[in-house]
Amino acid sequence: MSLKGAAPGWSTRKKILVFSIIGIIIVALGVGLGVGLGVGLNHNNGGGEGNGSGTGGNGGTGTGGNGTSSGNTTVKWQPEVGIKWQIELLYALNDTSVDAHVYDIDLFDNPKSTIANLQGMGRKVICYFSAGTYENWRSDANEFLSSDKGNNLADWPGEKWLNTSSANVRKIMQQRLDMAVTKGCDGVDPDNIDAYDNSNGLDLTQDDAINYVNWLASESHSRGLSLGLKNGGDIIHSVLGNMQWSVNEQCAQYSECDTYAAFTAANKPVFHIEYPKGDTDDDDNVTAKQMSSACNAASAGNFSTVIKNMNLNNWVEYCP
Ligand SMILES: *[C@@H]1O[C@H](CO)[C@@H](O)[C@H](O)[C@H]1NC(C)=O
Ligand SMILES: *[C@@H]1O[C@H](CO)[C@@H](O)[C@H](O)[C@H]1NC(C)=O
Ligand SMILES: *[C@@H]1O[C@H](CO)[C@@H](O)[C@H](O)[C@H]1NC(C)=O
Ligand SMILES: *[C@@H]1O[C@H](CO)[C@@H](O)[C@H](O)[C@H]1NC(C)=O
Ligand SMILES: *[C@@H]1O[C@H](CO)[C@@H](O)[C@H](O)[C@H]1NC(C)=O
Ligand SMILES: *[C@@H]1O[C@H](CO)[C@@H](O)[C@H](O)[C@H]1NC(C)=O
Ligand SMILES: *[C@@H]1O[C@H](CO)[C@@H](O)[C@H](O)[C@H]1NC(C)=O
Image (cartoon, rainbow, N blue to C red):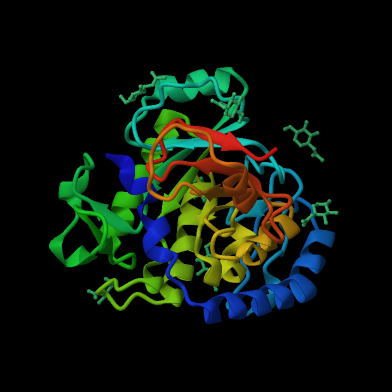
């Protein structure tokens, strides 16, 4: 049932053009003023790294190279721009034949042995969980308080926005990060951090998301886990310094890959997913036209692009 993995893709993609334009301007500022600077200053200087705060200029501070320092710990794993990846969230992973260096799989559904097996094949493993929504089928679902829960997600039964400022929600997320450590994950993919872009019923704002994502970074890094920003184009420059990658859905479809190129400009990969078949979840190859729409977006030339079904099953195609 982690069909939900793909859910936010649609619900958060409903941005209007204005947001894209603002995003492009912010990126332009960020790249011009901050990232260029930050990339030049890249050294692992052991702790105390800042995160870009608020305004667009300082996104790239202290990032890149090996072992980025962040929070009080050195990040163990900083993948390179352009690294090949696979994502499969629909069921426990049962196909390791895809020749990708990074696998993004469900934290709850996969046992430690699957992760160890992938690592034994020289791969890195990112463990997916929803950090911003309640999912009623998860093993820890009964630990959320009713006061933690906001509106239902329109298209996804059993899922509700969470108050990411709640101490109880944060305690549960710490337990999930502990689970990621126990299972041996190299990093995590915390989804649904962009409640501000949706009718969340909890008055959650962009500032709340910035605070939460930076908190997740600190909690992840102190456990030796890397992490990325899932979608969330509007907050990139306030969290980029603490992120090791971006996971983006449909920036080609929505002409917003320029926004996410702030990551590749800071030497961090963009794990980019396109769904050119819409909600037709078959395992047929895409047409040449669909391939072109997914693979030839402006600014996405160095992205790690996968063409997937929206249900995020095993099926995958790569750009030529
Ligand atoms: C920066 O990140 C830290 C955690 O790493 C967080 O506590 C702090 O609130 C963040 N600052 C801003 C301005 O977002
Ligand atoms: C980066 O890390 C890799 C593997 O951990 C190591 O082989 C390489 O020398 C490191 N590079 C730098 C510049 O530290
Ligand atoms: C993997 O598991 C899914 C769900 O049970 C199943 O539909 C699929 O055929 C399996 N694939 C392989 C390669 O075993
Ligand atoms: C969310 O949690 C914070 C911290 O407990 C609290 O101050 C705030 O009122 C909560 N928001 C809602 C809408 O309940
Ligand atoms: C740094 O992280 C380690 C590992 O989680 C933790 O034990 C330690 O208390 C942290 N130190 C500070 C100053 O936050
Ligand atoms: C689908 O595409 C892959 C390469 O992406 C190719 O190896 C395979 O033969 C194609 N399958 C069909 C049925 O055309
Ligand atoms: C990709 O990276 C290379 C090397 O850093 C750079 O020259 C090129 O402009 C980048 N391409 C895009 C589309 O950003």
